[in-house]
Image (cartoon, rainbow, N blue to C red; front, side, top):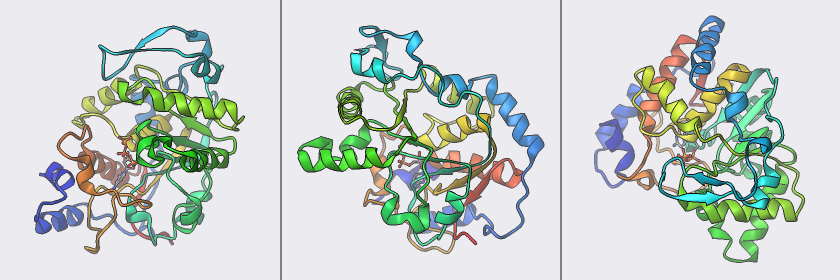
Length: 319
Ligand code: CTP
């Protein structure tokens, strides 16, 4: 039923939706939450049996050469050639090599962030992860500005930058990339065949304009490994969302993990409407029948971890 809530924006099931947000009620940030160090370490250890974020965060230069053929993770019959540009942008060593941070923020893109005032709290974390090149400047009071790692699904180029149809959109993307200023740009380039050209456009822009980002391209086994971990823990996800992927990776190098902007429901805890994204007008129905994700299920798992003190979810205002 939770799936239907997310997948059918035209559904008149308003009652169902309210129930969803009530069901997922999370106490305000100020209520008592204690980090459970023992559990966090146990989770890190378990996840390490499936993947190693230090390695799986990116394919390294030494392991590929231009012209190599790669089978897409989700479209095994389709292949791509490693281009010269892609090769040049592969890191030589893991961008997370030997890294340990006391606290990390993972910022999802839910509209629940709007009017949260969470910006300063988010920026105070030692490492901040964001998803899909979501804009920050105009929303800094609620989402903060600090960005240490940002993901970019190739589809973002279509969704947020009009497939670079003209100079204006190219310029917009260029500005966003320039603003990253040394952070890690994480591009799942080997997942699905549709993104090939978009990844190439971005690679070309980065090289041509000498953009100061550290590019990373997740390993071919990462998604299945993450899915394997969650399935083993009885969380029956179809394909992990970027948000869940980031949490799973962060367990390796973050001591405490704080999640913001994770709320895949159209009503908040007080039954007020919540935008799907804080920055655009994408509807919940966007995910549709074809959605590979099971977001409410993921949320339930994250909520359980919040209650156990393994992570902290903030779904309302910050103090
Ligand atoms: N998210 C959420 N609730 C929303 C929107 C997003 O919990 N209403 C979380 C999800 O974990 C999601 C992440 O924030 O993966 C980033 O959001 P978005 O850019 O919308 O990701 P998706 O479009 O779902 O892309 P992907 O397929 O990469 O997950």
